[in-house]
Amino acid sequence: MSRLEREFYSQDTIKVARQLLGKTLVRKIGKHTMSGIITETEAYRQADDPASHAYKDVTERNKAMFGQVGHAYVYFTYGMYYCVNVVAKSKRHKAGAVLIRSLKPHEGIDAMIKNRGTENITNLTNGPAKLTIALGITKIQYGEDLVNSKSLYIEDGIKHYQKIIASPRIGIKSAMDKLWNFKITI
View 1 (cartoon, rainbow, N blue to C red):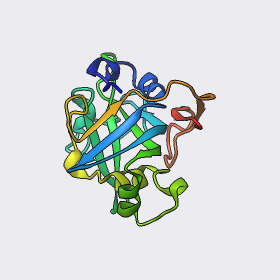
View 2 (view 1 turned 30 degrees about the horizontal axis):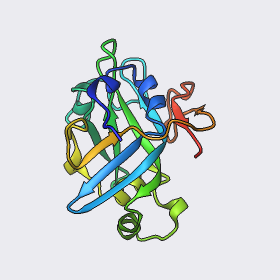
View 3 (view 1 turned 90 degrees about the horizontal axis):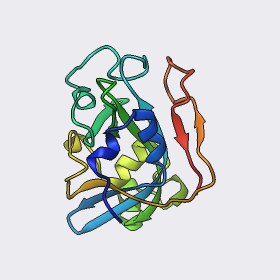
């Protein structure tokens, strides 16, 4: 499969969130390769999105969202979990990122099971914190260039799935009218 190029991430954040569905997130640690098909995403922009980390302005935490597209934005939440996003935005927006919410495990499932401490495959990577634990993604990957990295990147994936379901984003208290959560079933 071919790795996604920088131009892919240089589109409107919402469009990228939809187009990431079915793509493959790959994580390499030493000799282990783990991957999963992206089945759920959420788009976050800036000035028009009060639910976004970037809404008010650039901070130390969110500065990746304002940077070059195609880089990882990893943040710590609830005092115990990491979530991974990919910076994606058109030139019309100062900031943007797509949260990877869920994967269908594909490769390296035994390593993911070990990392998560569960053998329940359907529960292995079906949440943003679950997938970062399974793939060993931490703050160390903050800012990593997914276009050139040897250890974290996104490849083309499956082309065919039933349909994309759009709904409000999960766990937010504002901008609930924006249907920027996208899911597929495979």
